[in-house]
Length: 296
Image 1 (cartoon, rainbow, N blue to C red):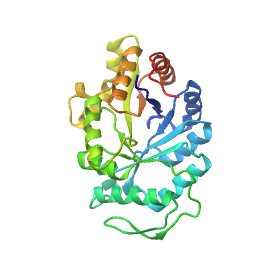
Image 2: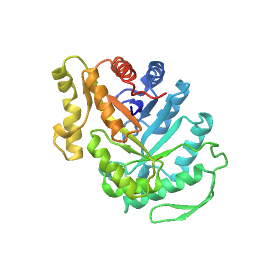
Image 3: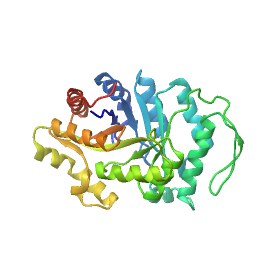
Image 4: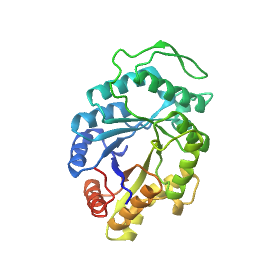
């Protein structure tokens, strides 16, 4: 039986002051990860991660994702190193391109998004390892930058990407790949092919976000999910019926998680839609444990 880590997203639309209590309650339910979001105009990812880490004892907290155009690699490495030293072994940092239109709206759209992402991830990882970084790249310039307090245990840095060239890049330079909501087992097969083309090995982690809604009435669950699914379908460029979700009755949801795990997901992060998200989370966790799909 393939086992999988289970995470939960603190949705960007939820007020930030609710994060400490949600993080504590999610930890008490036994979830493995809590992922926070950094979308333009919503919450800051690093500050949200700090709140979640300080509010809990054991959860791994993931940042999904910091947009490379918005972040100086030196400053991002400083922020991540601070969290990693105070909360060793509990942080995963996601870095991505950011939404192109959003980056343009604040005047930081790069000439080469691929070059910027590669130079950012390479330099952040090197700085977190305590190295002195000299880089005169296409998008990033660092003149002998070195952290005074690098973490003893550098946190994993994963790339939050979607397109083929970016997935290949992730396999070449990142510790793992963060995969957006809506991608199912067949998509993961293609992701593994592309990251392997970039050089990813067996230790390259696949972290999959998934819309989640559970209830006894499957039709009501579908109605609850419809706005999220339709909006995401437009972003992905696929019909709504091809947007993969972890949903339905709780047993259906557990089966969908199992399908992702069998396709190579190391972590499935549930983005819960609908009322009583913690109750939904608890029900899914119990069912996954009974099915032997939980790690830990």
